[in-house]
Image (cartoon, rainbow, N blue to C red; front, top):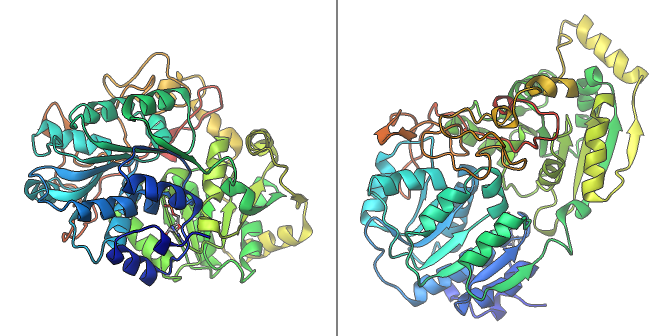
Length: 500
Ligand code: AMP
């Protein structure tokens, strides 16, 4: 089997990999690294958990070292575009980890934090810039970023970019890059518009596809429990009585739901933290750090907040509620079973969620083993005891019917796209954010990057919100909302994305 030492990588990279405990490249790494080292463009069909970040970060670092030169002022030698700030932070972190013996500068640019430190980092130029599209376009508009000397361009999670309405901004950014450059393109799926973007960007790419052979969800041990909506919290407590749940992500459909479930778990003695779009960047990071350190057994998250969370050794994923979009189920359970590990996913399904279950089974082409805990005496007794003890009040549980609040509104409004100019009368189903791929430009609507610090009409708005993360600068928390736009299919009952 190929080892990292067989790939001809720079010894400084091998040293860093060794200290991370990585010896064997994952399939995408074994194929992509030699091609990118040789200067080829790359089309990678791969989802998170396959090791795709190292598949591009390692050969990029290798090439940067082989062709050392000063970073261009206000620009970067390498530009990586990511759909969310969480993913951007993780990618930057990977570059720092793998490149720790090489001394390259790495900076992140995303919304919801201050402009100042980002401008400062850009002014001097950086070797590797990891950015989300909206904020980068802001900087380009202000002439604080100029990408005319970019040597390598990486587009990560292109299909998520489509979901979030970022295709136009991406094309705008790409139009400012030099014609001669290396392009690396990653996407978990290849819908038509993404295929078109790939063929426009890539020049005779080396193709590598890892998803069809080993989809993550097939490595996850899945269980589904039928239980009444108002008994789900008791069911959850029962599940957490198992000490095997060491590091569990619990998914809820709404932000309020996440807070309630976290409170319930804490009340029952299970250390838990909620993470969602109403939490500041600082709060999110604190919760993630506690979870990573093993100080909190349960991270209770909404789909969007959890996107891109990359934590090794997540033992279990629990779907407290089934997601509205079946693809989210695959994303959720993929939080466990990272990098070849196996994991467990347990879903709680109330009667009104059965249509969602059908959609999931259709998508995954799997029949999830089920248990029926409806009308269960043990759960009812537990609920009664809690109530008698003055614990949890029977609070409303988000029934699937709650998601229908948005019904009757046009899809583009349901998708929270009420921003001036951002709406479109015929919202494209997969694109909640921008209808028909219209970008939410700076200051328009909710974006994956948060609203804090977005500009409108050239005026900086709320630049005082939050901080920035660049190399050497501390990230500060800010009241900028997590900025979340949920992918909504217009044809499905929809909940309002502000809840997610
Ligand atoms: P990614 O698909 O890039 O999100 O990576 C998924 C996870 O796998 C991350 O936690 C990486 O740190 C880890 N990882 C990546 N490559 C390897 C490798 N060759 N051996 C072990 N773990 C890896």
